Length: 148
Image 1 (cartoon, rainbow, N blue to C red):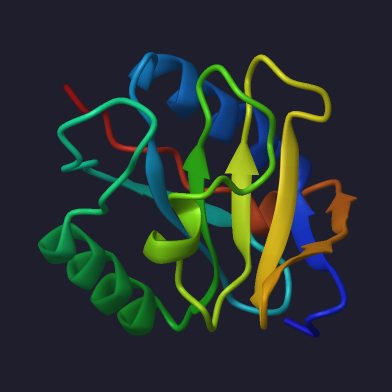
Image 2 (cartoon, helix red, strand yellow):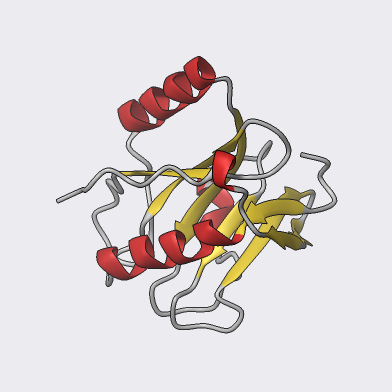
């Protein structure tokens, strides 16, 4: 990823919103992967946080997702999490829990815009524009496994 934008296939937008709605009122979280510069696949991992308005990604599931991506020849392009009833902007608690080396996509099914990407910088956050594109059939996003 160039850092100036987060390229994302349109099909992932609805999948991200579905995952966020399915976990409401809790936050959903996971990673975005792709073989090139564009995110083509998402993985959701369990949120271990006890309270509402927080997420703590399951470390074992994160590790398994990263190993699978490496085996598939994919790159980790972004982390993502949802804000079930808030705007798609990083909150105070997000500063402690986010990966500093990856952009963070915030999914807000009730907000407008519903998806916004951010990069952690010294003293705050910098918005990373999303670059949406149609998905060619040979790179269709992988369907999510069903989670309880």
